[in-house]
Image 1 (tube, helix red, strand yellow):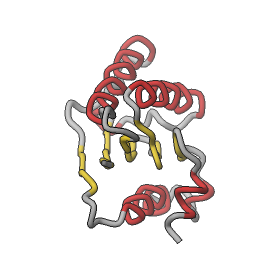
Image 2 (cartoon, rainbow, N blue to C red):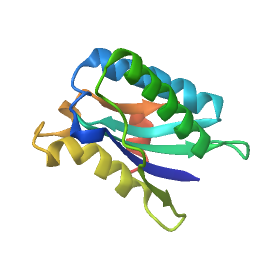
Image 3 (tube, rainbow, N blue to C red):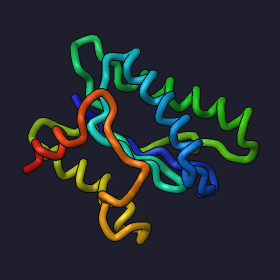
Image 4 (cartoon, rainbow, N blue to C red):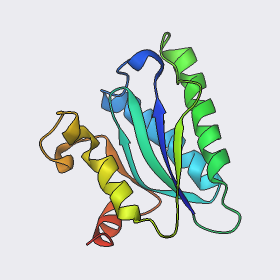
Length: 143
């Protein structure tokens, strides 16, 4: 199973604009999904929100708890390191059904910085990638 998530920062504060912060969050995300037998085919940190798809890799995978753990750990990090920045309480989620094309979801996430006018091509955007799998493999499967 795969689930697409959008997590927003409270008040639209642009916290994900520097590699140092994005790398901290990416490391926490990597740990959270590995512990719950999940991978991330695609993620994208926008300045004030984050898009990602979490995919379970086996019957013991726990997508929900992977995301909750990530939000809790990064929320604590923001509280102790970046006063005034926090996650919104809720998030948007969409279970990607078997009949849906996951490639459409991947393209939506990768094109987000283009739609927002941050770059002219998604390839130029620095705060995107995959965890536990290879982005080129994910993209290759879309062709």
